[in-house]
Amino acid sequence: MSPAKYLLAAFALLIFASCVHASFYSYMEAESGFVAWPMKAVAGANASNGYYVTSINSGSVSLTFYVPEEADYVIWGRVLAADSDSDSFFVSIDGGPEDIYDDAQNLWSGQWQWTVVNGRNGGDPLTLNPRIFHLHEGAHVATFRMRDGGSALDKIFITDDMSAVPNDSDTRDLTPPVISQILLSASETRASVSWTTDEPANSIVDFGTSPDYGSFAALPDPVMAHDIQISGLTPDTTYHYRIRSSDVFGNIAATQDGTFATSTLLVPNTVPALSSSGGAMGAAPTPMNASTNATDTQTPQTQNPAQSAPASQNPSAPSNSSQACPRETTYASYNGRCATYSSPCNVPEGWKIVAECPKIISTQEYESRQSNGSLLLLVLLLILAIIVLLLARVLRKRPGKRHTKKKKR
Ligand SMILES: [Ca+2]
Ligand SMILES: [Ca+2]
Image 1 (cartoon, rainbow, N blue to C red):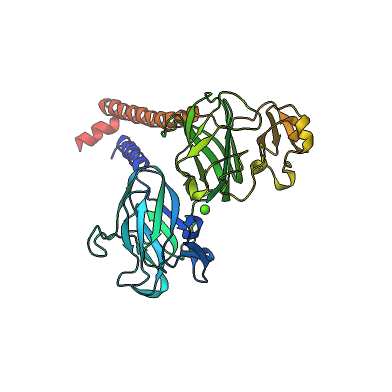
Image 2 (image 1 turned 90 degrees about the vertical axis):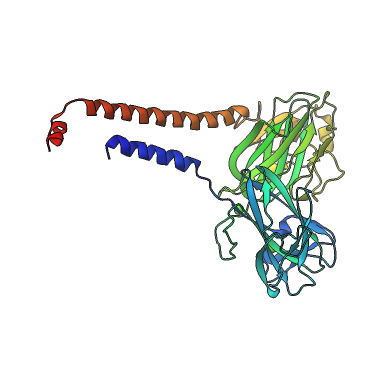
């Protein structure tokens, strides 16, 4: 094989490798989901993470998970079912049709075991085994509703690899962060989104005027208290948004689509109403200043920047003296973080007032830059391959000594 052919083969291999589909594997603890009473988390010595969910007769658990691309997926459950009286859930995805998951049909045991989510499709148990879910890129919610009282779910495993079997001794981190305590506020042209994760992860907020978003604001550092400022919004406009956080191993958690509205006028101490089609893990986005419907137990503070501040530097709730402060937005930074405050009076000690929070990664620009980058690389590789081919042709046409000798033989 000529050098040119070697190079061409390498180039083809490179193209092939870049197109090869990487399988998706993800674990989630059942108790990390939104548990609807009377379903509840119960301590169990042999349960993963020490807890599982169960109920005597009804209730459900909803787990929000993110899949990176459109494909067929299967879901496995780590279940405990000693007999046929406590071995089934109704399972649905994204509020779609429910089917019965017979979680230990003919495999009843006093031990925890992994079984794949199956379905009856109106017929006998295990008519669909496994039950295959065709999912688009994005966040999805798997709901396990109690059917046989006493059925127990410890953990789930989601994959597009039909041959994969979940493994309790797998020590790799295949568990995405759990997003909670979402707080959102918006003014005429800005929005502030904060949330927490149970492990260090980056911070991304996708937003736009449609559920396709089109823009995002992000901070790359892995943190557990997230705070993203979005600027340049259009006043009096409804925006769609979702939060994403990826741990250092690339496991991504995301919320489902939610909406907020920018205001027409800045009215002191109020925020525009916002709605959501459901936050991840049951934590519905809540206006910062609102005291109603907050699913988290912490009372939101006015313009609370605590989500991004180190514990020792948390600004206190506005004191009476803050009444004397002019109502204006102030930006302050501390240790590489930036937050908004209702006025300079509320900026805690140690924080430095800055003109504006730096926009770490811009919006569409970043995405287009990324796709342009990979396109450029492909074009460059293609040009390189063509040059090598042409060079090889020219060399072959030139009557060299070696060439003639070979021909004589
Ligand atoms: Ca568990
Ligand atoms: Ca993780």
